[in-house]
Length: 357
Image (tube, rainbow, N blue to C red):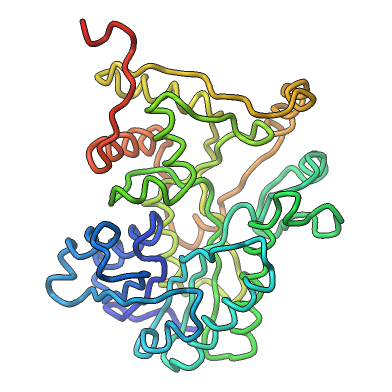
């Protein structure tokens, strides 16, 4: 399909969220008209930042109530749109049938609109690399777009913590298959890494795990990552740029997926230490994470860290079609921290004696 026209109209689901908010902002900055889909347009605690954008004052940005759990919630939003950025999360990834039902009704709205030429779907790096067996990372250590989690492993179930990645893969395939049947639109998937960067609204500090963990660091309490996995990050602004680039690109095809991730990685305790290094003015008290792994797994910490060190994540495909240069992780951490303080009012814990200095 052709990309959306310059100045065209794009619907963004999950527009009040961390990623969705930045997608809306970037689309407006690039001259598009945006229909922002939110649960409650009257909830200014969550959508006030959207109403404060210049495009809302002019009418180029409009807000639309849409409850993803309600069939047909986009039926009156999508007609007239050239593209859709479907960023919104379902409420329960552990229920595969529910995920399929939500996909079906969103797809039905795209089909009924008759004007949508491209859907950019937000998936996750989890849909590339989440494994129930760590040895699978030894067997297949390179994370690229053609890699999927081992779906033949009988332990790959929601009960084993795999519901999120299973649901994301279901959604990717549902949209790509529907677009192929239709022939009138295409579906392109973004698989972002761990989103880090500045929040646009106070409520967003709780609308994604990574900025919420950084909030915990600032308050002196955060956990070790599962299986000692290092952060594999993308700045949320770069993630938004990837979404928009895929809306615009002539070089993509239906069903393709693109990893939006820098190649930087950092252990969670080193992320915490980075705050003090990047912002010495805070007199920030660096703390160690709480390790909630059972003792049998703590005994394997060195082994698990070695397995992660042997993996590689690739982003050459998204760089080729978008020309993006990913921001350094230091910039993302600094800007995230400063926004948590200025936007959400977080007060970082200070080093003992710092108040007297």
